[in-house]
Length: 117
Image 1 (cartoon, helix red, strand yellow):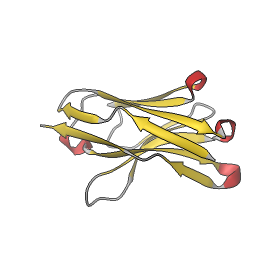
Image 2 (tube, rainbow, N blue to C red; image 1 turned 30 degrees about the vertical axis):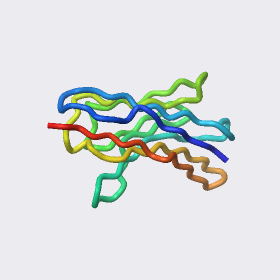
Image 3 (cartoon, rainbow, N blue to C red; image 1 turned 180 degrees about the vertical axis):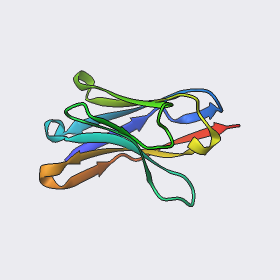
């Protein structure tokens, strides 16, 4: 089992920055990929960014060039640096961890990000 705790959400301004953190605990050594997804009201959950245990990174199209995912293995934490924020970035952001051999996907409780224009 993997437990994920997000932090760092809140209110940001258009053009501003916020940083999200996701601390993992439990079966950390088995995690193959961690990432961030978001869900705005009335919309489906969408990919923001993922980073694999090997360091491969993937971004959703709407955040490329503005958001950066990184990790600190010593702290078992993944970060999402969000720059050049837009009102359309407003959503609940969820941290995700995948263990492929167990076909298991774990989710955090979500953190609200609201961007004012």
